[in-house]
View 1 (spheres, rainbow, N blue to C red):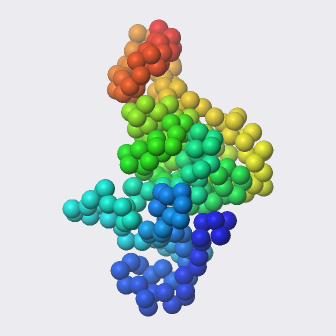
View 2: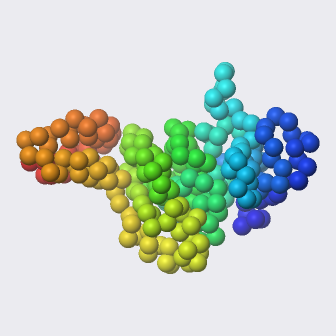
View 3: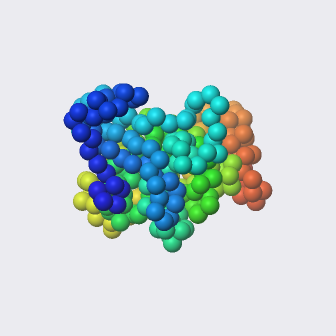
Length: 258
């Protein structure tokens, strides 16, 4: 995995050579590669503390958020344009016609070590339009496998809503037994079969997940008041481009509230 992901370790005196970002001395270095299948170049780096250093992660200087930023630039580290591990996962995603999307660097590495080489990372909890467009070049089948903390769960619904706007029917796996995919892989001994079976048991339709969460709030309310849930769900379901799929979800909601 060190070789596959080109991992490194910064020198203990690295601070003497870099003054444009915080001290990155004695940190694990994660190269961020272009989305190329052949000979991808490194366009940026991320650095992680070995112990309890703060901040836990430091990203290389990138264009994200700067005034006058050109999001179409190639060969420049724009975090929102890239997915960690995409260069390593590209062929596997195409072969399997689906992708696991996780949050962090170690989540990606542990999933690859466990045999799930069709895994990429968001490098945080945001999921941008450009990242989705990059994935859609290869597959429309996306499984979200995010951290089980509150930030990960909250991000899940936002990602589902964004994905359905691109006519993607997302699948999710809530791994509440473990804090993140990295811990899951380690706890299950990087055993592909065990991990696959675990994920299969926790697999859900992303849109049904949102519907269930919203309906749950109205479960104990008298039936004529439950129609309020439609006001919450209408903007979400109406964003589904496919009319047949959209109507199918409306019918499921109606069955629950009437």
